[in-house]
Image 1 (cartoon, rainbow, N blue to C red):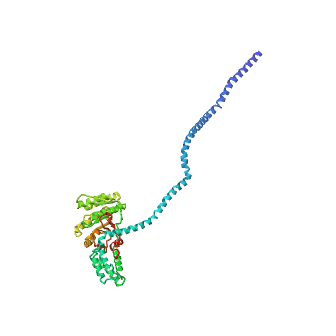
Image 2: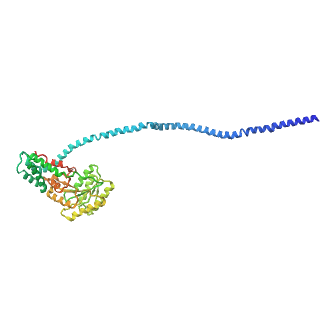
Image 3: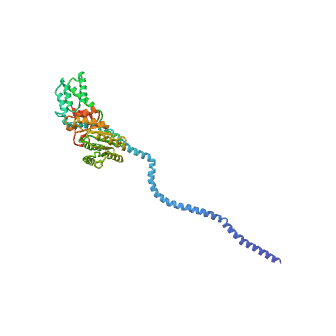
Length: 431
C-alpha cells in the first residue's frame, strides 16, 4: 500500500507541477503583457502618436523648411525691407537728402525773384514809351503837352504873364475850372516865395502837382472776394462792353477764372458782342432773352460763378443817359439784386468815360456818383483826344481813382493806371 501512496503523492506533485507550469506560467505572460505592455501600450501609443505627430510636424517642417526656403527668398525681400529697417534711418535720410536739394532750388528761386523786379523796371519804361505813343495827340503841337511846352521851351527867364498863359492852356485842355484854380494857386504861392526862379522849375512844379492830384488810388481792381463782382456802368457809346472784353482778357492772362454777365438786355448787339469776347477769351458768358430783367441775368451769373469757383464776375449794363432819373434808379435796383445773391456785391462799380467828351465826361461822373457808390473810373479813347486834361479834373473834383485807361483798340491797350507813369508820358520833359 505504501508504494501506491507514494505513487499518488508523486502523481499529485507532478499534477501540481503541471498545474503550476500551465496555470501560473500563462498568467505570468498576461501579467507581463497587461501590466507592462497594456499601460505602456496606451502610453506609448499616445506617445507614439505624439511622436509621429512630432515626426509628422518634423516632416512637415521639412516641407515648410523647403517652403521657408522659398519664403526665404521672399524674406530676403522683406529681409531687404527688414534690413532697411535698420537702414531706414539712411532711407529716411535719403528722402531728406533728396528733398534737401529740392528745397535748395526753392531757396534759389527767391534769389532770382529779386532779379525779377530789375527786369520789370525796363518794362515800366517801355510802358511809358507805350503811353507816349498812345498819348501822341496830347503831345502834338496843338495838344495839351505841346502847348505847355511852347510856353517854356527855349526860355530861361519867366514871362510875367506865365500864370495867365498856363491858365489858358489848362482850361482849354478840359482840366476844369476848379482843378485849374488849385494848380495855379500852388504855382503862384511858390512864385511869390521865389521858389520858382526859371521855367524848368515851373515845369517841374506842374508835374509834381499833377502827380499829387492823380495819386488818390487806382491801379486796377482789387479782388476782395471770391468771386469779386464788378459792375460796369456808363452812358451809351463810351465802350463799356469793349472794356469788359479787354478786362476779361487781362484777368484771364493773370490766371483768373472770369464769368461775363450780359446785363445789357435792351441791346441785342451788346449781348452778341459779349459772347464774341467770351469765345475769344475762353470765358463763360451768362445771358438771358432779349428784354430780360438785367438784375435776374446778373443774379444768375453770380450764382454760376459761385458754383464753378470763379474769381471775377464782370457785369455789363445797358447804357443810359445820366440825366434820366428813372434809368439811373434802375441801376440801383440792379445793384441791390446783386447783394441778394452775394453779400457785399457789387464789390467794384466802375464808371466808363470817354475822354473825347471832355467836360461832359465830368458831368457824367458827378451824376453817376450821386446814384451809385462808384469805386473807380475807366477812361477810354485817350488816344483820340489832344486834350486829355479831363483826367486831372475827375480825380481832383470827384476824388474818384482811375483804375484803367484805354489808349488803343487792342486788348493790351487797356492799361492799369499808374499816376507817375501817366504824368511822365503826358507831360514828359519841357526840353
